[in-house]
Image (cartoon, rainbow over all chains, first blue to last red; front, side):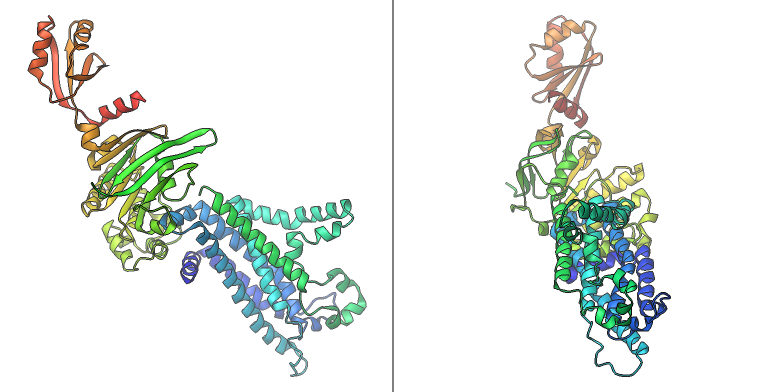
Length: 266
Length: 298
């Protein structure tokens, strides 16, 4: 396992595109809980980055940044095809399972490291934003911390799948954007129109699931009572159902990637 | 009898309706420099790709070192298929370090193989800055990393300039001297003749002949003949027993002989039939002729 991880790390660590993207991502990720303090249309924005709502806000803001992670994963996956290095790895003695396991480990470790960073940075930001030095309730909404891990792994699994499916960087990135913005939204609309329980199905589409924060954002921003009582309005975690669905899509996307790599002539 | 390093049984692969490899049986003895000879598109690369786990055979089987194929075996096989595959942005050394991690060999091997192919001075340069010849040499270095028992080389001199070709061939001969088994696919007859001990000739995915180079390709002698009346000469030769085969090549008749040719006996035989030769030349059969003969029959 450590060997597969070291192989993956040796490939990406000197890669300039990876360094730049991950660097930009990290800067934005760390700055996030300090820079999003001023949201003009929200009266009591302070609440958002105080304990314990900060875990939700950090999760919610980081969701937008994970586009960078998607591009990183798509690039390093399609590179293996354009450089024909997946092929070379098999020639050199890796099994096809190893190819998937290596990437899976890399993504899991990356997500875990980012999660730890979120905890440390979020706690520091929470302390700085707190009115008084009482942190007893700091962890009440800490359920969003593992939720962030599930989101990150999920979005990377989706990107890995697209990378394996299209094998070309530009095409896979285009497919990602196309799916996230119009395609899934159109599908949701169609499903909601066609089926009685269309909403049920459309809420289970991959991007809806992976990007779900278990909070009705429209309601949150438009309902004055919600804004005044963010603490009560925002639940403590993603909830069991959404967490399981995130895991479900992650398994599906890794499963499909595994199936493609196993069956394919490299 | 030497042990076989590789054995294939009825190996077959098609791409849609095109049958790239048809029921191929190969036996590669330990320590051989085994050439797979065939024109472009004859199924050489497809065969090697199956043997290295990149393509899945439609039917048939093969065994390395007498065992069913599994990924770990390939760590003991050094391979260069078609073109060198490396990360363009990584240095030669970093690329080899990754290969080394995959093959689980000692990191000290990296410098040794770079030295062997003459790239140690460029070890820190990115792969994308290399010339075609250097890329090819790096691929050979990578194939040598784990000090493998078997080397699989697919068209290793493809795209190289004459000096590069000579260097790579010299390298192959050096490696073979160290007792390694080499599987070399090539469409260049000269290459196979110069470096191989054994050869398999394939065309359109079918095995046409297999055995030692001496046996298959050079054991026969040939006699070139010419007379004023070529028709009469042809008639007279049709009854000449020591000739295994007779072909018209340009304005000559070429005989392939079964045994050691006796020029005087042949000359006397024809003179007795009233034919006077204007040209008689005895020579050992070249690989090219054998190859054309073998592939023409198919």
